[in-house]
Image (cartoon, rainbow, N blue to C red; front, side):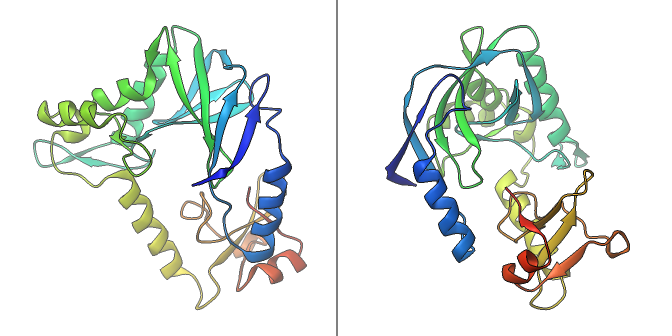
Length: 243
């Protein structure tokens, strides 16, 4: 995280000052790398309102998609080991748990950083209760100690009580994503791992192996989608980089 580059948030997330962001994105497009996360120190207002759970650690608040700070929940299609030796749909359960938490009150979010995928990461509360802390304490998310140790004690308590994801040893979400991404790269044509996807609206978007949605993007050559060996070829063919 580059703490020298800072942003200001005004009236929600929509008017984040973007001078440094534009420079970072230009650099990313030129070099093929992902811009680093940016610290937000001056959040002049905390957007609030009714929210919808996108998954176990992401909310939709109005037009904004917000990643909850300090936690990592199971992916939506992820299954976890159960106490009886089977498995259960922990990704779906985490999403449902977060939805239950937000359905009866206004959610207020305080931005913390903009991550490398250009998502706003924020601390969010509902009726004065910290959503990240509740998700970890109830066993529906891991404390994402790679970025914050804020909920480490809540995770320890959930582990002792064998709540939800802690009922039996299971793969954490970050390892699940890494394995899925590696598998997707392995399936790509040799040295041509960039996915040229066509969205439902007809947009031609390419995903590098570092892209957030790379692993879950499937290529159908029958629909005109294709693989690219480098980003320059994708751009020349009319595809744009995934945001």
